Length: 252
Length: 310
Image 1: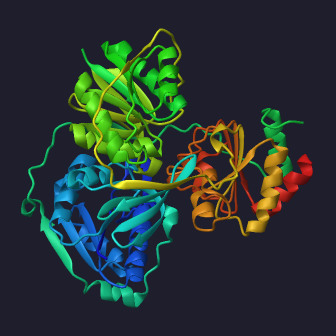
Image 2: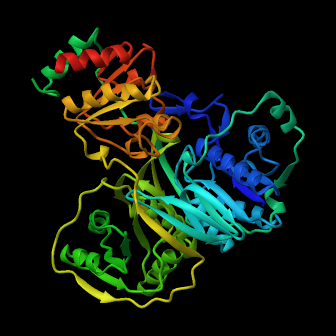
Image 3: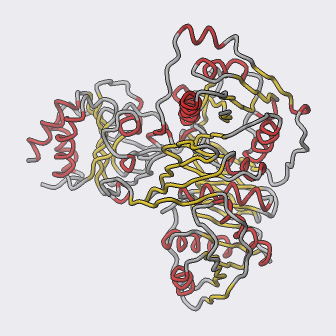
């Protein structure tokens, strides 16, 4: 089966520094979100168990994608479809969804489209639902398990208070939770081979779309929350208990 | 006059949305309406809280089919001339938000934790960059879908609402529900806890959870964890994960053991009143957001604390 995995290029969150409450993004390497990587791993497992087809990694962003994509190809993606334009870096979910949907329309015989339940940086969770709508495909969110049986997928969807086992006709859009799979670490050989895998570079004007840019999201500020923590160093357990008692945080 | 519609499948979240709607309406005079789908009890609850409810009863509609539900809400938006839709940012609501926004051609912001109306704009706060920052954003244009974080607003009360029927068409669904099962969890609610004892990847083995549990018990608290402890190691259930894709907690006291302090975690605990960090690394990021810092091995400290408190 052919599975599209949509992945978002984001700054490596562990390397973001805060200076005067502002995030410093210069020199922070780009990567894919961790839930996206779980989606890729889930796709690779489904492809391998079906014994045929390909995992197509789809992403929209700036030209750095050409480098960022290597890891996804090393960890099991067969081909990459990269829609690259400077304007797509940090673009609204609605724009990215239109671009990804247009990209998917150019692919043949897609059985399944996977997303992470949210991106690593904004965790907004909109793009998958928007893409499903744009392609008029059924959607199921928050999958912890996916089994394919012919032209249907059986999905275990985890909600706050219950789990639903649902059946959805393929092709469909499914978003996954990170515990659906643990992303693999690529071997050196796999990393080297990844360089030879097909990368299809698409520019915005090659896609058959006129972007609806109405209702943009305007960001007024983006600052780290103010933190007024005491940061008092205590030497041992006894001292810790004393300070917590003195603040009436623990009994006794 | 602008119209705001609220929809959530859940009682408490619906009442929280009603308070958000009233906050917005008090600034811009918008008319508020509530939508319920196949849930007459919720319709009554909202009416009793003073909302004017449009009630949909569509037996063919499968609530697990988010696209179909979005389609029904979109018909409500259309028929009632709504501009702003407020949804709950729980999993179902978030999945719904993007879909509805796409149908009605709206801008959409999810996980909204605070709202302020300024110059006619609905300014929303939400976490960004994995929780490292809080962004203030608004949607330009009239059609807006805002998904509001659970517990960010109080539940509304009031009286004298009304209930009217709304007729909609339901399209055939591509989704079948085979089974709904209660969640395989130990049913703990870390969001409500006054004291949280959280462990991270510094925890060496699953067996060590026993000492953590006994510390939590003697403090009248609950055990929670960073994501890898549940997702990778599977030592605790997903319900106990603190962080951006887990729970956002506001305890009086949070004791954090063996947690390095990645933003995706800290976003879920930074509203705690007092934070204690116990970590072997004196330069651990978590120490920057702690009130009390103890540089030590949790495997020595926790048994000591248990002895001293026991």
